[in-house]
Length: 332
Ligand code: PMV
Image (tube, rainbow, N blue to C red):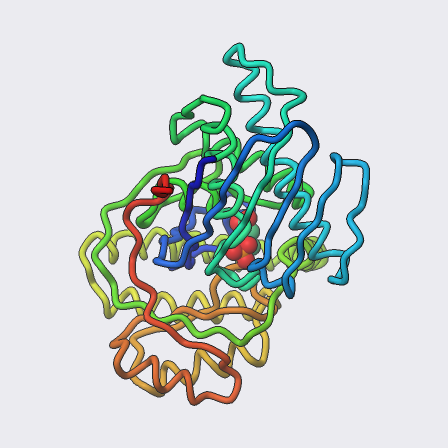
């Protein structure tokens, strides 16, 4: 039995534009998904009581059978798709190293602090931890770069090619990272005071990415908005390196405006962004795909957390501490 865990993340800058090759800077936070994998005779048994799916446990024999549980089909398909693909990647990684794992069964137990589909990288954290735990259970230790790449392949397959490497690389490495196409690097980051506001909802990443693509195809100038986000991210990197919080805040505000222009904000996200700004945040923006879910604000957690908690749109607010470790193995 092996347990691995990986962190969630917020985007300081650059979501959506990263899908078009612009840079983005996600930053890992102290919420984790833990995945325990145990070998069994055959088949795949998945228990994921905490995936915000109202608790479900399913047993099935592989990719062909559909488990019968009372949760929305798209959420279930996505959750099962991630686990199936992660296990397939672990089997391939093992067989490339001469271990015959084709017939090995697994029990996979997922226990996650990260709300699902809320812009905090829940699926990437689950996938990174699942591949690591499954390969270790097969006696293989993957280098982090390979693990991040395999986790990306899973997201790419499940999200129909719309995913960037941002979430999976960040969940593997921890800290703040910079993604531009295939180029993924870790960044030195100051320990920024970040607060997350969560509206209790979720956005469908695949759908939102498709929506931005459609907007970009109908109106040529939308491509300029996307490349403006890229310019903003490059400035953001300089401000991050200098720990220039005033500029970082300003850029987060502009980034939120540009994401709104791309049509991915929501009334609840805008309300939380404004609640944070009115409480003194240097900057605030939605994080992740949008449509609902979370915002991230830069400022004093003692001021922002209570202010956000009282905002009608907000279901939960918390100080998001920087995670610097990324993927790790948990003691049993
Ligand atoms: O909402 P999340 O955490 O899945 O983030 C999605 C970020 C996008 O840029 C919209 C897509 C991606 O894969 O980078």
